[in-house]
Length: 430
Image (cartoon, rainbow, N blue to C red; front, side, top):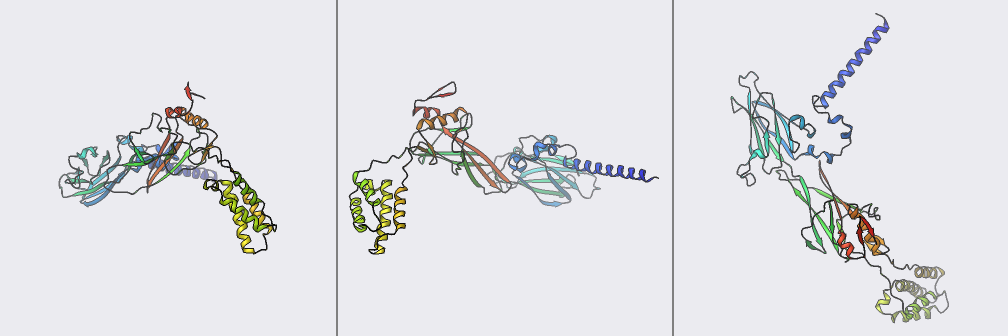
């Protein structure tokens, strides 16, 4: 045989081997060519939380195995349909019991389920078939039965597979349920007083009244837990942001669910009296050596005549800091006067005064030039079926992760009540 023919045959054998291996892998990962979900690219990048069905709360453990060999295999949610399991089921298992020795004449295996503690308070008057069902009551030795968990339960369940010919040959396994979060409810407060009957609107946004008061709505998330036989502790993290439709503040991170019911009004400071203006000027006039003592003491006499309200004025607070710097430096230097550095620092303090903003502020972080500007943005969120703020709540414990979004905003009626704004054909008219 020529070398070229040998090489050709070798290539064919390698190809056959590769195809055979690939076929075997495909068969394994497709559950015997019945489940192709793993080969769908749309499923490759799903987060664990998006496939919560495979993280069901049921836990199956073998207790005894006498005269039967017993194996169990959890059925993934993606294979429910192929196994005739309703997609509303919580979880499902393939259970297989094999009678030993294999030469037994009667190879029937009987399956049953019961509450572990039939006297427990939780199991009273509860039909176990509402929680656990088999697809068949009897199987042949080595044949699988499908056990389906329909919903959460609060008392341990015992599954028994027994030989029909000899009930002492049996395997027993327990089924427990881990505490899961089924949903999230919310408790609303306004100025620490409870508010009842707050419901999300059709677009999923919780809208509260804009009162114009400097009081806060606080919202406490309350997990609604499943029944369970295994307790689990969950930790939670809250993050929030202003929506893009609101138009401002999207870069601000919030870590507690709240909503301010009004805007902080601008804090315009009062006009200074002539004495207050004179104190600032006298402090500014303190020089290196010329009459330093008399200028410091004279300025202090003017300051002492000011009212407490004037002393709290930002300009006076700055000027008094500058005066104190000079007074302290002069007392430490004796009669040597003040250095140029002290004088420069004193003047820098006086000049550092920044007038308070005349803008309105919301949630202590966003400024608005007018109330109408704020109202316009808040109403734009309503027209876009969004809230002013979106909060994200994540609960986690091991493999269990639950993500919830809470959108909050203001009712259109309450926004319209504080300004001359009308809604006409979904357009804001000011």
